[in-house]
Length: 152
Image (cartoon, rainbow, N blue to C red; front, side):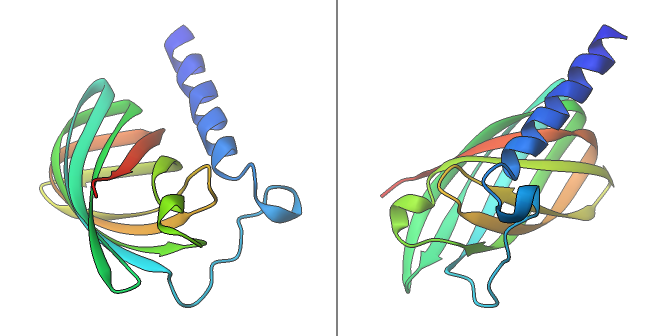
């Protein structure tokens, strides 16, 4: 019972952090029609209760490609998976706004291949709408956090 309660509190905390700076008392910020950048990433994930995700990719910002790395943790997560994703990045006024710690609340189930969509937000207000394809076996009912670091 303690484990379930702690997991639920962590989910609420991380989900609240994702919308803490949103206007109108917690409503998600409006996302413009045109993204400021796009990204592609490849990642892996392994979990048995608490999971770890790692990966790398390329970000296209103002016509220039930048390499990045991601790493992060999730809770109430079980399985092993390979992840390929594409994303649209919003609310970026400079390249420095993209690096940071992103949080998202998600729930998903992947068996032998599937898809997932998530909206991530960092401390600079950057928002990534990410669509992922996952291969493997994975069950996730958790809030996740991921750090994105530009390599150049």
